[in-house]
Image (cartoon, rainbow, N blue to C red):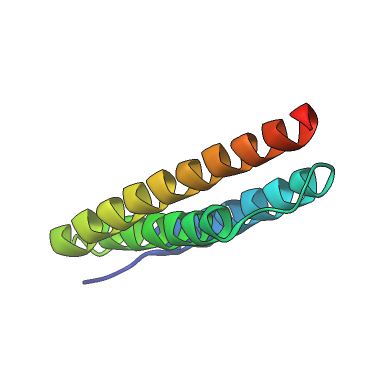
Amino acid sequence: MKINNIKLTHLAATIILTFSSFGAYATESQDQTLVNKDQVNGRVEEAKGTVKEITGQMLNDKSMEVEGNIQKNIGKVQSEYGDIKQDIKNETKKNK
């Protein structure tokens, strides 16, 4: 399997954008209350899944691609669960 420079550049860009968006989310969240573990762990898993999925595409490895997609979606669900918990917590504080 030969990987060309375009595929490597695409992978590097994906990794950088994934982690940059996580950093932007963390900065945005500082204005409100702290993020919870589910939000952080979910977004980390989502990022790892995205990288694994794209790596599988680049290497033409279907099982890695599917595994990455599943990991990405599980992370997305976990982070959304954390978002809901945080919203409830924020609303509870407002109503007190």
